[in-house]
Length: 131
Image (cartoon, rainbow, N blue to C red; front, side):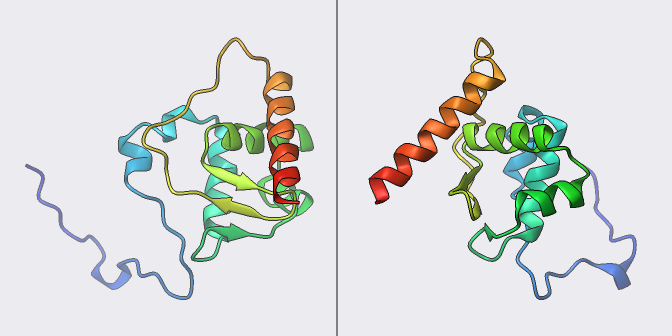
């Protein structure tokens, strides 16, 4: 058994003024390994930028600038997180969702463009239901 000892007691992490956290299940249940590098980067950014309800209002151009992603990389990462049920997006606001029971892997037979079309169709259907 490993005995844990705080290395720098004067630097113990505290949550002050923000609400960012990542559940331990994200690592232990395989969510981290199910994501691409860009998806991890975007997911962590959205966690850092979100409020206590997981909501974030950053625009795609701001996110691309912060994360040094081009538009295609951003769209692929965003759509991947939507498909994997880790975030919700209504075209103006993001919500980081509670983790699903297990990681969702996209169908490897589906192309990224088919996945993006599916995601866009899902968003359109959702907005029409709400209207």
